[in-house]
Image (cartoon, rainbow, N blue to C red):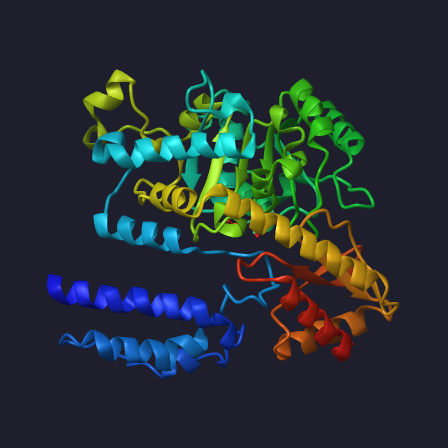
Length: 467
Ligand code: PLP
């Protein structure tokens, strides 16, 4: 492709994306293909000669789009949202165009310095502890690709601290024990497996009726493990679980972790972004005790995937766990101690210029628009809850402080499962099933940028007819 063709097709593609996003409501929410359909409709072997861009785009329309699940659709009620926005798409494009590898400050100073500033902006916008700012003596923030990577990095930092940094040499990790509830995201268990701790060293702490960790049970488990000669090293608390947006009582868990010298990580993947609106700052309760925290602008904030903000109050453990300095990565800037090399704050070496999309979104859309969206989604969810409550066929299965409503059919699991299946087969929207208290639950997650009260009313009318 020549520069002139790139200019022409670039305009066409941005136009195509704008048309897609404007018209996404007219498409089905879910992909309309069977397994294997997409591949079968494409050339099995790569072409040897270049093809016109128009031919490729024709295949996008013909083959790719029917196989696309439309996450930006206003009837997106599945999983959690993965919102995009026009400025963040442009930030992503600029990042691709610059093609920067920001592994070290010296490999692109602006990539590092904008990222550091964005983490400090987000600390301020979310009202997070001051000691997480890059200017603090011990803390700092970094963009990770996903909340799962953030959790892994937290586990590795905790492992480093608990083993006095000996794990890379002859350190013994076999006595380490981690704690979380059954409501935690699977990435906690996965991270422990990757870190060599293993699933059998993960203790499941009992939760209360609202799916929140019981601090008394945590304290007892830590004491029992200590008594058995084991080394409690990591607690994962949730601020908004995936199944039901349950909040663990971090303000009570924190002192237990402090006293036991256990690393406390808080996973606020989706719900943490609510703190953009001051009236939802309660989502931060207890964070002053956390050694690390993550939330995802790529879920509810309108910064397209991937963009996880991760902070730690103990950057020396993070750097101790992940810094390795081969000769080819040495630089005078790093050796002077005046700069950050973010490769030491994450698992991979290479990293994209992700801060651009966060910067573009905050500057071009403005934080007030994001706050409005969050407030609207919460208000719409509470309105839906009021409708569900007066329908005697259904019951609400969990507290719904923000934008997720968990509903089940009073006739039992078979009726709930049948409703989820029928809803997903209809054009009412896309929904996810979960299990709470060993019973099936229909999750209604209201967070797509385009979702309005009218969409949710229509969705509930449709589900009511299907039930
Ligand atoms: N933690 C929680 C509470 C989540 O809900 C999710 C995903 O929905 C994750 C972690 C994993 O997020 P990611 O896809 O960014 O790894």
